[in-house]
Length: 212
Image 1: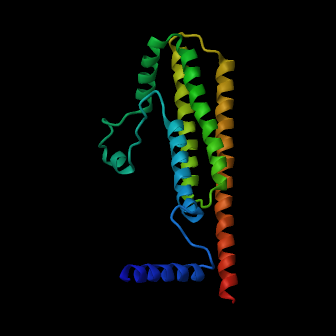
Image 2: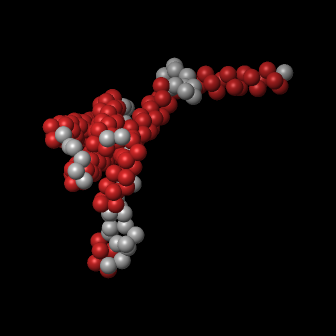
């Protein structure tokens, strides 16, 4: 008899919850939970795509802080851009014609940038966006600029070594980097606009409710 009564109490509580929620029972794993987790998952995908753009076949140069610069410390341990270029060109020796390998490496970087642009465009449909999403894309833009600088300087070094450099191919590569940077810049602007639009919408909704 006690078991039956306990079951009846559980039923009453459950029925009351249904009435208070407008007749809809709420279970874990519903669409609201999916909306809460979806932006996190999309941000992880976006961050991974940015990481692929940042990936380089050379050790990245390290910037020196303003404090270290004025104090004269830390400069010896800092990896300079010239060191990165020298390391990269040395790696290319075992891979065949170095300029062609340079073009190949750059094409991989540009392909990663193209995939990132597609991923960032998809993130526009996310239920929630943040400035962090914009910052991620801007990080990739900075990486592309730095990568092109290394590729361009490396090509100049190869020419100084007497190796054949196709100026037309190098110019075409420069154009591709400019297009990739411009494309990601437009996506970053669209993400920022979407964030501002959401904030305006939320503010308007708050004002409407406050007037009731």
